[in-house]
Length: 176
Image (cartoon, rainbow, N blue to C red; front, side, top):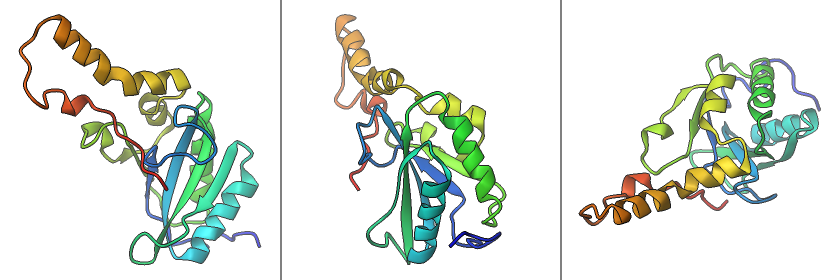
């Protein structure tokens, strides 16, 4: 059954999370995982169906098996980690404005644990392109920065303290 305007009104949180979870359909460096939090199992399944049937660039959409908190479910969306992703994802966001009451969508990219880059910010095609690694090579490079920093510090014989590079460690996506 197709969704009508405002069918998901008051049901979807306004913040989309990226790369918080591991993909099911491939490797972390090949697949971007976007997640929406939805109040109620049926609305979550409606959103899942809407996305899977309407967007051929989506590899998979899936609703969490159980509720995560207070009747909320997660809808996982998997797509290829490619440069066309921000434009395609923003088209989806614009379409969601017709079936939800969310006007100002936000997003959070999980880069480093407790990092300022994990801050919630306004979603736009330019922001997504600037923050999310859009190729497998860029994703791997972002995760290998801590190894390079440690090597530089050791080569330069900089005095070290325990935990001195903790803030550079990459975020490890959660299993579903």
